[in-house]
Structure formats: structure tokens, C-alpha cells
Length: 618
Image (cartoon, rainbow, N blue to C red; front, side, top):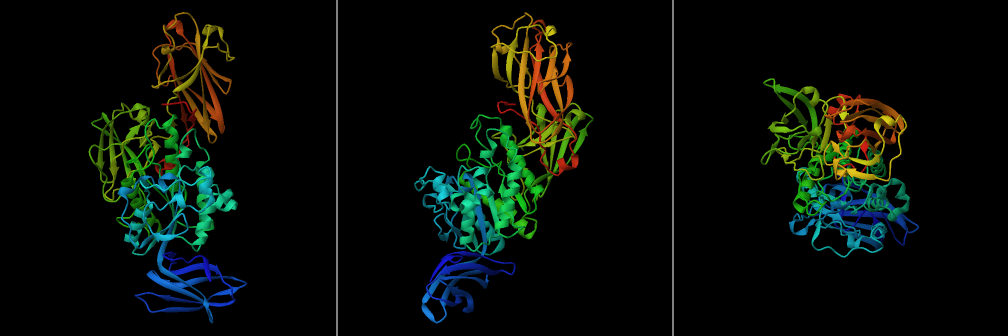
């Protein structure tokens, strides 16, 4: 007799709502007949379950019901009347089991010298289909049995890593053990460097040749029941360009996990992307922040989903959390998972989310923004000066004060209307310094919230610029063709000053044609805001929009605005700037989204804004 799934030495069996096992198992044997189970432990009397399964045609399957939480148990299965057809499973625990999936920060890249000390009641199903006490690295990729792992590494598994491999799993299991008092099991399923396309549900039919198929195989191997899912992934979606499908893909993925676990309310905890080293990627950090903000919105979008912030934590290299930070993340995930499963307590709550925002005026001069945070344990505090908040459009924060669950930001804004046209951000950029946590040591999340009912994009900072050797007055509504002097130019300030394109700024009459593009992931009512210090003509998607022959110094960031209704997809903007007899130097350009619902903003809903082309750096 041989067990093929559901019962193994040192396994953790998933408990049911009555704190009893309900484990499905199956196997092969030579004879037919009824199978009897005998369960023994040091603390409980021997339990005998007759006809726990029936063997026919060399196959048997059944359920091992009624074993209380705890253990360890010794389980003996025997074909009735045939002691030669038997098997003994040793050191079995009953408690909670979790799937850990995603990419390298779940896989684990922290230094092993800082790993958590293993405990017997927290165990792992390693990549080689073996249960044992959970000890990093639990993703022992050098012994992975599912073919997808070898395929993703050019056909050869890596050598054993003796220096790195700490992920959040062991710390998570130990904290869940502390919170629940029952044994914990971890099924390791992550693979570093993978994108959402590698985890697509439509690839399940490929079995172990797909990541989700391999995860499903490992789930079935262990009785098809788990308590929840831990997920850390998104780095690959945050580089290169805007991933408009990310939110939809995550909705589908979570639904698929719940479907094959046969639990529509299965708890799902994902970690919001952490920092990444400055200049590690050549693209705009807005793409990184875009994924972080979309991740945060999932906590509001879907039931039984929690998003755990990591923006305050340390790195071991350009992108991976160090071992102490991985251990902190594991504890935070356990706190969130406990709140999902059992409801919030004073110390275990859902992850912190931004809440109500209001404005105050001090001495009729100083404008302050107060933001209240939900799900705070105790009070907010920081080591040193509270850091991590910014306003868009360069409005300075003079002072940050933490008061209970509220943050008060004293601004340098000169009027309230201007303040209501910007976004309040926390954790923006590739590698911001964020140090605000609550009394449970949990960070504020990365977010970006418009303070009014409109929202502005960053200023466009990258254009293809063409020299037009004609006077502005000679060019009508048709967009001109440029010369061979076509330059792709990125600007470090919001005013795109083109004087550095020339050794000496020409005084003769000519024009500069600024061209750029943006993308919308849905239809949007927009305003184009232009600032300019010379005469301009504007084209949108090659269509003439407006002409102002009176433009002159000084340029203001929002000299003029023009309404458009942008369809989903890619769009182009071209601005012709006359040199104004040598007095015109550049332009400002940004877009504004109108008709935002303030109630959605305050709930933390993801606000989809147009995205400039990938070369923009503002």
C-alpha cells in the first residue's frame, strides 16, 4: 500500500470549522477491500475509524475526519484482514495550511544568517514534495520537482544557495502559531522573476509546466484544502510601461485560487511592492507607483483581501527585502490574515488605509491638510522626523505632525484652491524614505489621493523636438513637417526650456515643434493645461485644437486649458512654439482628469490617470 496524496510524514492537515481534520487522501494497493485507520498520540486515546476508504482495482481514496487540532499523530492505514497491505504515517499535525506564491520576494532573498529559528509546529512542504519543519530557504529551488521551475531557468535548476533564501513564510507561520495556538503548514510555490503572464489561469491545463498548474498539483497533493493564500508579486509589471491589465488580472487570479480551493471566501493577503534602488530601472517611477496604488485598491475592491505595506523596510540588494524586513513582513501578513479570518481585535487589524481628509487654516495664513488613517493600532509614530509625504506640483510640506491616527501636514501653499488641485502622496518614487508606523509596527501604505474632485498628471518632461525654419505667422492650422533636427529631449524641471539645445539661442524667426504621447486605460474627460512664453498652436491626435498668437513672457504653468474627451488607448499632442524674436524658450504641459467622485477618493479607490510615454521623468 502506498499513499500518493493527502497523508505524508510530518504533514500539517488543514482543520475545518470544528477544529477537526477533514483530510482527503488517496493511494494505490494490490488488493481490494475496506481500509481501516488507526490514529494514536501521546495525549489522546487510540482512535479507530473503520471503512475510512475502499480499495478497488488497485486504487483507494477517502477522508480522514475527526482528528482534533494539534498532534503529533501516528496514523496507520490497513486493508481489512490483510496486514501486508498497510502503511504508517508518522508525526502528523492538524492546524492551518497556507499557499505562498509569487516571485522573488516571496521566494526569499534575505541572508540566511538572519533567518528565523525553526519550531516544530511550523512546517513546510518543500519544492521537492517533502514535509519537514519550516526552515529557510523553504523554496529549495535546487530540488524542485515541477518542470516549470526548470523551464523558467533555461532547463537547469540552480545550485543550492547557502547564503540567501529568507522569505516571509517562516515568520508568518510562527506568528500565526502564536495568534491561533494551532500548528501551521506552508506550501512553497513561488518562483523569482516571474510576471503575471507566467501565472495566467489559462495555463493550468499545462499542469506542472505552468506555475499555477504546479501550485494546483501541490495543493491536491496535500488534500486540496488550505486556510488562505499569501502573494508577493508585481515587480515585473511595474517596469517598462503602464500595465493596464494588472487590476483585472489580479481579480481573475484571486477568483481562480478560490475556485480550485473550493472556497469563495478564501482569505488572500498580498504584499504591496517595497522600494527599489534609485536608477535600477531606466523608466519613470510613476509606473512602479502605479502598481503599488493598484495593489492598494484591491483591499477595497474585493472581499477577504488585505494589502500589507512594505515601503518602510530595508533592502539586501537593488530590489529584494533583507532578512529582518522579510521577517517583519511575515508578522504583518499574519496580523492581516488573522483579521481576515477571525475579525479585528485591538492588536490585530486590517492593514492601515487612508481615510477622511480635511483642510485647516491656521492664523488665516498657514494651510494644513489633516488625513485620518483607518485600522491604526494605538497611535502613529516615527523614529526621528516623520517622513514619506509629498504633494504633487512641488507644494512644500513645512512640518509633519502625528496625532493619534491622524497626520497633520503644514503646507507652503498660498491658497486653498491651489491645494485642492494637487495630489497627496505617501511613498512616491522608486526609493522614498518612509518611517511612519503604528504601535504594532505596521507601515502606512503607498498611496496617491487627489485632494479635490480633479486630478492632475505630472508635468510632461519628455518630447521629440523639431526645428521648424519658418515664422510662426506663416504656419496655419496644418501641422508642419520638421527638418532633420529632431531631438528626443528629457527635462528635469516642469518647464521644458529648450535653450540648451543650441550653443547660442537664435534671434531669427523659427518655431519648435514639441511632440509627445499619452495613454488612457479607459475613456476620460480631460483638460490640456499649457503654459508658454511665446505664440503657440496645439494639435491633439493630429487635429487642430487651438492657436494663441499673443503668447509672451513670462510663462505660467497653466496659461490656458483646452477640453478634450480622450478615448481608451494611445494619443498624441503636438505644440508649435514660435520663438517670439528670441524671447520664447519653452512650455509647461500637463493633463487634468475631471469629474472624480470624492467619496471614491476617500475610500482609497484607485484613480486612473493618463500616463505619459515611458521617457517622461517628472
